[in-house]
Length: 606
Image 1: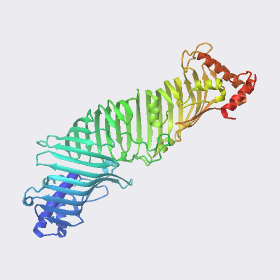
Image 2: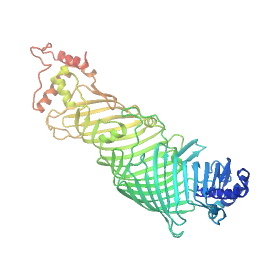
Image 3: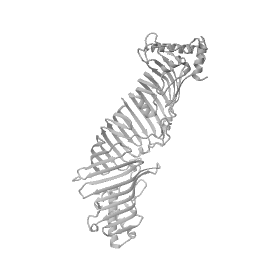
């Protein structure tokens, strides 16, 4: 059932009612049955008038009806229905005796169009046969005004309701052959939008309608959209060809088709020079746990679609993707997106994402290859993790299910292989830390938020089970540092539990590679003799030495620290002060074990 036919049916109803009211008198209660029979005969839709009706004769005929409903004769739950609190029509007195009735203004106050949400196209109710041939008997309307309207989409089976509210619209046509102009506003949830539209009818039915539209949607688009297209309506299919326009100052073009016979089926192909979208606002502050707010994917069940979008530049909030190209298919509640070309943060990404919303709990499957992407903005934007920087390569194969971000993180399974080059580990400077330990042991284990350790290469593979990402092959290579490690990343809690063994290269580095030695002969990396623990929230982890190994053999630990310090300071072209070594003021004299114990006590406040 098309809304335009409903409006025409109501207009015809008002013309008939006005004529009968003038002939018989006021009020209109006794004429309800006759009016309803006339409308159902001419349009195929049943109109019910549950409220009162009044008529004004001068200076023009004005008819007002309250509590009006239009629906299919069957009136089942899968059928659309229009309810209007108040209908008011103004028409010339001469129009009542005219062969073609004419309404100068039709005002609909608080109309609600109820549309069923259908999971299958076969669930749609058939359009009444009389409605398909009734257009000739409908009244001509010069202007339609909608006040506080709404479109309510419901599914009784799924117990959901979606609403487009606050609809204000003014539709006007100066003459039968002139253009139709419309303007108005509405609210999609909490996102407002406003529009202006001009439709120029063709000279004959074989030509398309020329449509110009301007759209402002600040909750979705950062700029005003202006477009022109050719539209053609055949049966229940609206074809929109030759789309061209601008989003802000950036041009775009494409085409679309919408089949509204039951469950909508959409085909869309758009190409943008630049597409600017508003980023989804974070539901929780950076660093906080994943949100438990429900994610709404159920709407994927009520439309089928084939979509191709491309953009030379795609901007989503602060994120910059150039170029972007993706194909999406949506059928039976399963959305499949294939990104064949995404240029992101200086690199490229390809992959597929599948979202299955056909069951009570949605499921997700992601496969992605990343090459040369700058790690810091990507990881920080997606996960609030800002400890790694560099050019990243990654292969991801992930799957999960759940109705919230936290549930998805908790149920994550799969694998990930990540590599970085030419970057840094932020929050720790291993060489400065060891220099302080060996040169100034009384200062303890020193780190600062601005610290960073340069890396030449970083690599790790993860096996992910129920949100726990486990690695046993973490490897790191920098100009002065080598490191291996293992441990677990708790994705739901956003915490790290890693143990790493850093080593220093005591000669001038040559090759900085995970697979080849550095510095040539005599440049074998020397370990600290104690693993480094990295624990706590990944936005601000604690980095500290594991002292168990040092306490087992403090003499060896101290000698190792002294050797590292000497090599490091020699490499840097200076010598460390003799803090901690035997001298006249050293209370421990020549006892390296006592000196090592002193270092340990200073480190841990014991």
